[in-house]
Length: 349
Image 1 (cartoon, rainbow, N blue to C red):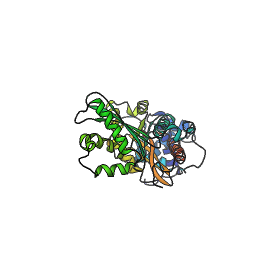
Image 2: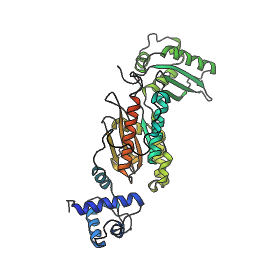
Image 3: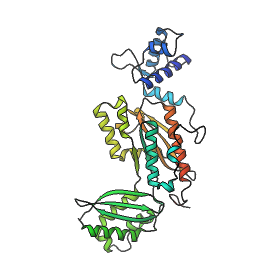
Image 4: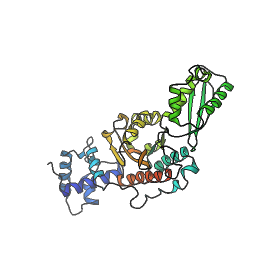
């Protein structure tokens, strides 16, 4: 059978919902009892066998029940109307974390707060990829010496964005010299945009400049900080609440992906090329460690341009309409909050 009629569709949707609720393979008797009391178990078994032949259901091990495949989840997601930005009622609990404006909270703190809200509202792992900072104006640079030839670099922008990274001191520098370099970098970078700083350091006016020769490695690391995009990850521990991730090796690989962030940030950057909500299920994820996951994302905007992207990672077994609603509404709230921040925050006037 290649065509899905109304009965097969109803049986498939019911099977998906049962599995989402229970995380256990679904049998025909459970479907008859809770969804189809007017049909016999044999009729439901035949429909489920047809759905297995069509690739929508699978039978794990020797269980009498069946579970949805990625193809089934894709069918389920596409059976709902696409979400409209700002249309309909807000998702439950979506407004609370955004009672402060981005300006009052500091943009960096606001972004972290949004990622944390996604995690709390969905009980999944929240993600937010910050905007590129190339049009942002730098206010100051502080360097705080640490042990083992390391330092903490703190870069603050005029708009209140604070980026903190640990850097390596090569060659090693004395503590007072580290602080002095921070003051010199503030003097050089203050009131310049990140793009101006990148261009300036790529081709310095004076290659023999004392700061350029003495602290080139430090400067290069700070410029790399400014050129990068911060990925906020919140609630990774929530994945342990789902039996799909109780396998130690599966969970270890996923946590390693969250910790390293590079692959995930690259994927989020790619997804941000298209406006709106995206859902990637199981093997649709190009990151191998996320093949057991679903990634749901939505872009946030500034002046009708995509500025960044946020979302959640969870198991494939998700209440998709509810989670999509939270992600979409959070993106709308972030867009609304950023529209109130000074106009030259990220984009040129």
